[in-house]
Image (tube, rainbow, N blue to C red; front, top):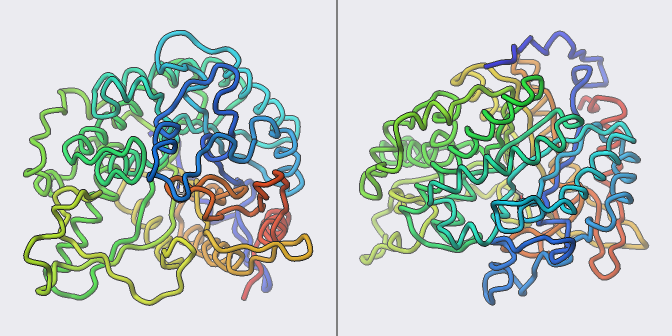
Length: 477
Ligand code: IFM
């Protein structure tokens, strides 16, 4: 690993009424290209798998698409001004591959690159650190037509695209994330089919996971060779995973789900090997013949940081005796080889996604990564919640979101005090946006977007977050 991880605890002062964060803690908010940009057919942008998917009837709630989204492509200056008003120190956004290479390979579409040049310049004008994610799920459709992520060549295409963007922006962009949540791209895109491209093929999902990680490694190598002085990482969506009971069956269920959700990505990327137990769980799905000699060395190329997206905990159990005779796990699943595991709820308060709110799970995840993997600066690259928001007299009061963010930031503070090198936090999301298969029906933003007129209204959570950033501290309880 290239970066050392000096203890951040020295900076954390606990005044009687404040939980202070280390000086220089990177406070940010995150978005993704397809979720906010719109302008789907402008300036030479090609189609992505999400254009195809969202335009396929029945795939996205109410037939919503990202054609217009938050119209950020045209309103980015207004949006950056808003970020500055909130006092954000950093902004994490993704680059739309089909704007840069409309067919996924070959010539560069200069107009697409220019958009991101303008965005980066605008951010820097306000002193906001740009944090680039190269791939947040919008694979150019022609690459899917050629096989998509299950095809090995897609990894090479991704590295080529990364090199193009990096050459254009790395003079001004320090922080580079290759992939956002490869678990979702692989297992929702090719396993359950809930996400684009909507394929339901277990073998393809496992292959996709491997080629996503291979593309990540190749991209890191190419970018680091060009600019060793920049920060490179990947963002994984990690879960706390617990067994429902102390039974051996439930313990095995937890091992399996932790294996597929967390270790299947953490281990190759940070330790250079697939977890043996998960490979064994997947024996009935694939023989891993798609893994070539040398791949794992590439996949485990040294990183400067790790991005973690945290939302909730999975509580799991062994199959129950009452399970149907014709196993429901024959249905397409995002848990290949472990389709029989039951996900149970504990009756905790949930967000509008029906995800249980579990801030202690964030402590567990961060401490676990720090304890079990090589030391690396960590960043929360996403954390946040969807709730039903209403505009009343031109204002949006969202106390549930404030409570969610507050609880999770307390968790962050706790892990920093325990010695974990957590260096920054990005709230998901800056503004309401296209929530994938849920379309615009779920609102994750700290800024409300009125999709009728594209008006932005900072919610009370945005004002609360601005105050946390300004004080670099939470109020002690
Ligand atoms: O909106 C998504 C984001 O694109 C990836 N991480 C989870 C968020 C909420 O579902």
